[in-house]
Image (cartoon, rainbow, N blue to C red; front, side, top):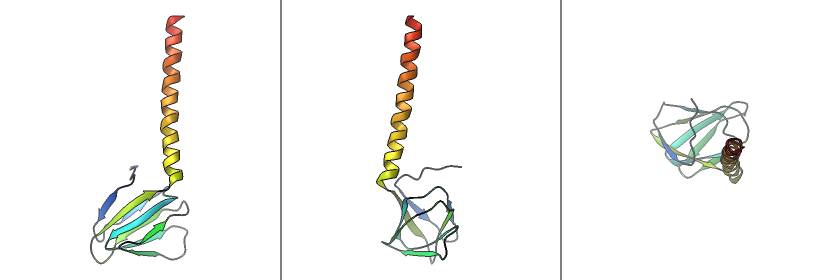
Length: 109
């Protein structure tokens, strides 16, 4: 299942890992507790304490888990990701407008 995390905060329970893919450019920010992250293809793991963040650079799968108790994580998208999403929305609206205009032109012909 694909879930768009947007820019929101999630509560993670200890021993309940979160698996992500396609997170290149996303910043993972620990807002409470301690997070452990591992990224397929990267050497070493990442530990984030409350207030620390890490920007994902690559297309590997990511596993995030709270350690030592529950934790909170926030996902923040860079400007380029926000711009790409906005452009995709505009493109969809433009396609619908063109399709509507073409249908109206056919009806009036």
